[in-house]
Length: 213
Image (cartoon, rainbow, N blue to C red; front, side):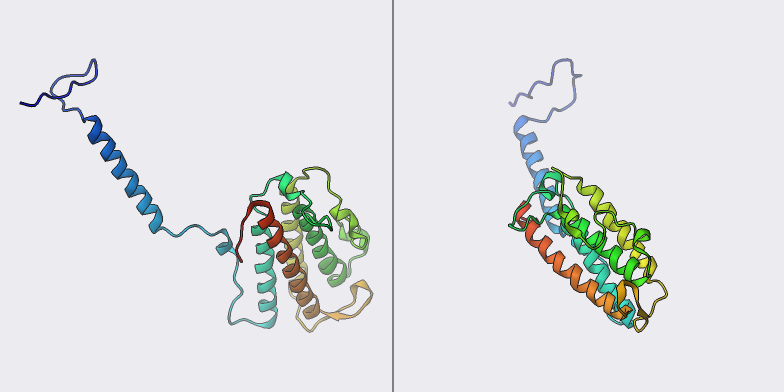
């Protein structure tokens, strides 16, 4: 004759109490169900949130699409780093993640405000340098705020899009002292941003081991 296990002190009679072994087995089974359900779900990929260029679009839309994809890549590669990591000098040139973001923000201001829109230099409102001597972009205090640099880069790119609105690729602009087309500026900015996104690939991997496109 089996004897029921005693319930906890103060419990009412007549209610069956789960044995310890059964409880352990049930919790283990529930944990396995949770793990299996998680494995069925694809891991979230922050990089998948980047806006992919349209496959069938006009020239300006295609150029802008690739540039916006690269801008989003820059923000993806710098997300989640600490201020100390982003200010750390890992290569001989002293290049840092935060310095790169500052550089890219003022590059946006140069090409889209000073060159594309023809704004005088005092109206460009460079944030980290004067737009020509760029050494100050890389001169960081210890643990400079990464969030500040990321927010400023977002702001600079939004202003660039506003400057570009209504422009056509063939249009000639003369800011910066030379005539060039809107097409040239967009193509150059794709090249510039892609090159620095590649630099950020390496820096981010050295800092926390992350890899990916």
